[in-house]
Length: 449
Image 1 (cartoon, helix red, strand yellow):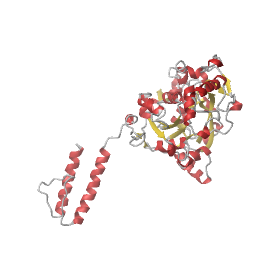
Image 2 (cartoon, rainbow, N blue to C red):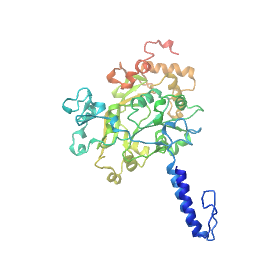
Image 3 (cartoon, helix red, strand yellow):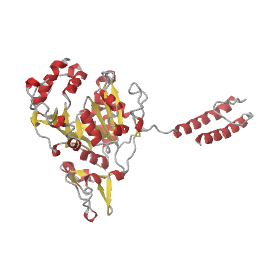
Image 4 (cartoon, one colour):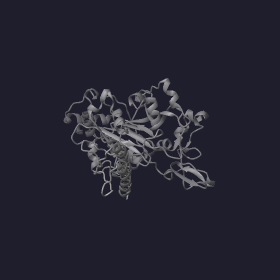
């Protein structure tokens, strides 16, 4: 239908052009493959150039957008060339809210079976009139400051969230984030440094792993030459990943992880459904080693200020010039402050004290060995060698006794419970038993292989 309209329009304009130039084509029809020769060359240029632009414009905007569901399947052989653009879309608000007698409630935090008198009745761990604020956030100082909370309210249109996760064999962690946060996160940007002809993450995705979520996954392979000017893995991932997302808006939210963190679902719900909370946001995680059976002792944990983990695209652009290195430093110039603080996004550097779980080296012994193989020589443990026969038993001993890669005992043995784990890990505790119980706890040192 569109082609017929275009051809008809073109025919009319072409006839006018011929009259202008004192030339009439015998058929009085026009196709792009035909050329009209006019006595006045200038006359033809005047008509043909705008006409060509109009036709090309109509053709371009009539083309269907590439379906994001084809993303993983239609990637180029080199992993980047020819990748489809993932188009961000708004989700229906009905997915996140429920109504009762005219009262709007956050579905995630509301007891749907007990809404007396039209009021939202909150589930344990949720607060607020709409049951949309996690209890852990109610304790924050800024939550009790009217000048910072006056604009805190539910959004008419939920934020789109982009979660970035570097990957170094953390299959279980990535799966927990994708499945646990699947309907909350709009895009998962994940990448791995490719040292082999068959990158493990890409191979598993191609085999159908997380198939039902692949329409949200952007895979970015990273090679060493991509790490330009001393840029980090995460910075390179953000640089290439955001270029494969279209329709970014200033209020879209960027969540940054190191690949070892599992984000709390209730925190993610709050960040998605509300606006008016300050920026930037730092995340403090419960720290574990090798599995959730070793908790890092507080005195051994990172005592530095937690890194920034969440910013809007607006804040990322104006405060840090789209550079992760500047974001990690957290320094904001005085000149930038006037562009940052708005009614919907006041400026305040704050920390979520319990944002989730960081599980360092929570991998099989074989994948811990492979991970050390794939990191630069300068970052490898001093004791590491390329010999699996000697390294695998050594790593098993570290796991058994809770020693980190610096041979320091930092783990405190604990028995994971439902309250101490992410909901997804707990539901999958039998399949993920290697993360719940120390596999070498009762094994003799002499039997370690």
